[in-house]
Length: 374
Image 1 (cartoon, rainbow, N blue to C red):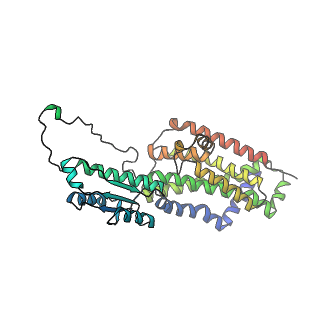
Image 2 (image 1 turned 135 degrees about the horizontal axis):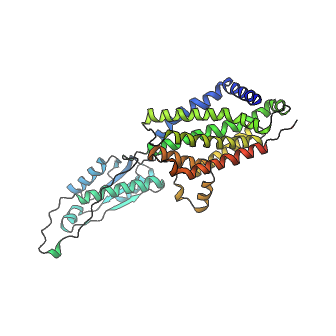
Image 3 (image 1 turned 45 degrees about the vertical axis):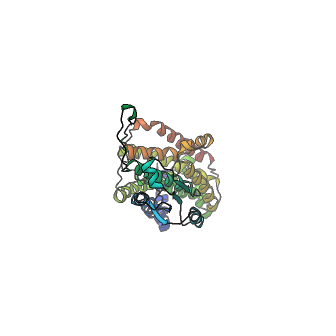
């Protein structure tokens, strides 16, 4: 017990002695959590549209006004021809071209239908697909609200078929704001970066400054040494997680719908698993530069495969399997479910067992791989 207290005192002194490390662990995640959700926003707005109007009728003008009034589109110009509209796409001044043919209003009134030409710049796949869907929704709504005089049917055979009206509402995020999806994920990633990088450099730093040799000749056991390295950063990680929840509530108004106890339980186990990975990396590397590159490799894989940027269900089978072997994937899923949906422990217990498994395996490997020589 005395040995553990000695190791913990030493680690805490090292942490609080280095002001830069303190700033990295506490100030940087706070600032990043405030800024990153504002930048990491996949909502598509300000889509530039080139409106080629060959009809110049009241209906074509009403359609343009309805498109601009939606708030998602900006008028990039009114080119005289379709070719000029395509040139605007080539120059990057327009994202899509909507061509209104001659006789647009006449055909709508007389025949009840009219085709329009829509061309979309698909270099940015997300912007093109979402922007195109928005525009089609606006046109469909415009078409449904047309004030066209139609003669009354003469018989029941002329009656239009019955239609089904659908009213939808978004659960857990009624206004469908992207920040509610992004902020919990960003909090997990920042916790991952801090925990992974700091601990990966820890034992390596002991090697570089030579204090590891002094520790090796003491009666400290391997598990005591690893545990002494893990506990201080676990406390720091839980503190960072708490600060992140406070920032999430104050800045973005997001408060966990589920149990805070459940959320902290998962965070505690996740940090043990993550710190175990960092310590394992630290036992392999001989220099801090090596440890940084190894940790960076794993952090990039974790971020890309975690489901933060893309849904894991949309990944190929091999990528989905690989994603299941990363602790970040499970913790991001849990945080979103507890914070936004208010899920109970019974609904996410499988993820809990996954994280316990990661914690046991990674810390066990770190203890096994640490070479204590006297």
